[in-house]
Amino acid sequence: MFRFSVFDKELFLYVPVLHIDGKVCPYVVADGKFTKLVTAYHSIQSDLLEVQAMISYLKSNPNAPGVVKASIFKAFIIQYTKCYTKTWGRGAKLEAKSVFNSKEELLEAHNEIMEMRNNYIAHAGKGKYDNGAMVLYLNPDTNNPAIGRILHCDLKFLDHSLRLSGYDKICQLAYEYVDLKLEKLNSSYNKEVNSMDLNELYRQAKTPNRTDFRLQNENEDMREARGPYNHID
Image 1 (cartoon, helix red, strand yellow):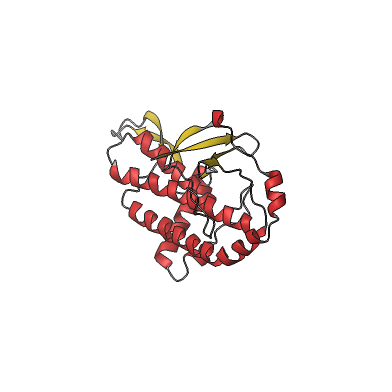
Image 2 (cartoon, rainbow, N blue to C red; image 1 turned 30 degrees about the vertical axis):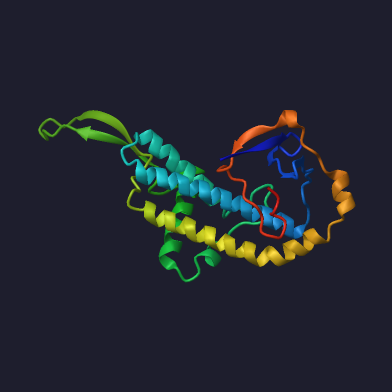
């Protein structure tokens, strides 16, 4: 399925084009404390959906080239851990103790990913995930001791195929946790939207130009915030 969208250069966003009775709806970006939180949690869910897609690929393609699997695995670690790190532009992040409350096994898998991020992906730290050494091969004839060859050996990617299902579970649990956060925010978010000055919203609004319309796959991440405002087709 496809729908039209426009690229807003000022917002640096693709904005879906909506209609009422065949007329294009003007749009404006909402602002406010709870609106920003809803935005942040939707953004976190977007990251988690991408992470799950990466895990699904790794599980479905065990014979993919090693460099491809390593690249996707690193991207998975970066995208996942971003959800637990306060980033520019977001006013919220996940806290592992809250997400994995009383689920020690899943918390352990989460901590493993965070360790890989800190000691393998983001930094060349001390750990089992980015280990290297110069290996000296000695002449097996001890009557003629000598160094026969020296090779650099390293371990840049571990085969985590047996851990992928566990990683998938922690991503799903985090996604469901954010869903609950959004449910709790729903009432305050709706009150905030209802209190906005309609005249001011219309004054700030932009109406998309048809010449700027482009087709965008509806499967792309354009999820609607909960509330009584999602009835426009």
